[in-house]
Image (tube, helix red, strand yellow):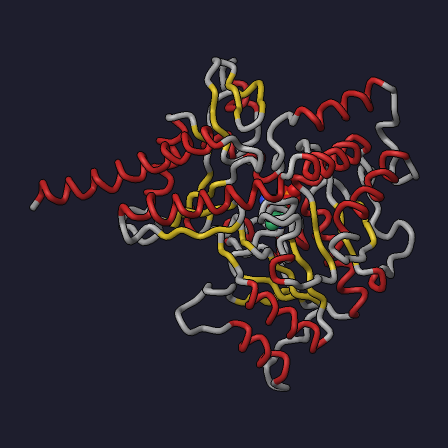
Length: 429
Ligand code: PMP
């Protein structure tokens, strides 16, 4: 199929298709297949919506069986077997073993809708309007969530003021020595700080779109302590770094903290089906019926997929496998790939990694590497300030040979660009 129909008929707002301008048709595991037969290794994985790989066989069988049986597909938020089974499995397989107690709130099926719900709840519970977010954050693009998203490119089209949010630098997000948590405490304690006490702090413990910026366990614990001391709710946006991406199911587990609200979406349904929910501490559940309503707050197939995903995770030992792969990929990136040039900076956790090329003179270096990698049949995205960080988001189920192939492509293209610049300089000298 030609790309013309999209280029002429689809709104200019389309984005990913500009970096990967081929027509895709099929997908399996870590591979996307274009209609011309080319196979691409997928390191974008539906921006984190496909942690279990494309068309995961186990999950697919559960979905097919459910549909074959004429089971209910649209149930608004009524009681259904699919929803009941999902809640019970999530509780039995994840929450109880981790000693967590949360109530489930199913939201409209996008991440941004769940963020809106979290904001409403936090503001209504605390009767405060201000919220703390972090520079580099991405929490969605609807009005409330956009106010929490720091990128000017997205904010400038809001058309209205984006208020009631105060941004702080993320850990290591400013000049050396800048301690945003001390500043935060000062804001709260100084009666002349001029900043309203916030309802909540919201953060991604690894900022994904912001450039793969990783918060340390200590920093997260300190932030949580400040929140507790001042009665501020702690909201963990686990939409991209959650569902096993960090190694644990939840990104905050490593820090041993328990957020007041957890926001999940993307890989929650296990199959790339739309689904989003909040986990809320029971005492915060002050909602009145239907206050955050929505037609698709209960996509039954997503419940089936979500339950199957948890079973797949348990039965295949996925968590241990991800932790192993994380060690492997970190070693390769830090000791081999970054060894080529001291300006290459590597950051990440679990199976989300960033290759930061912002210290190089060429502002388009990361973009070029991603583009050349696409020509070499690897799909990889650039994120962060001015898109200078290559974000690696493989399927959690990726096989070692595929992982190695993808890492080789990246290494080759980075080296080729650095070398060609070095050799041009030498030739000029
Ligand atoms: N939060 C985070 C951390 C995200 O990565 C995203 C999506 N990239 C969102 C929120 C918004 O989710 P959605 O695109 O489904 O609205």
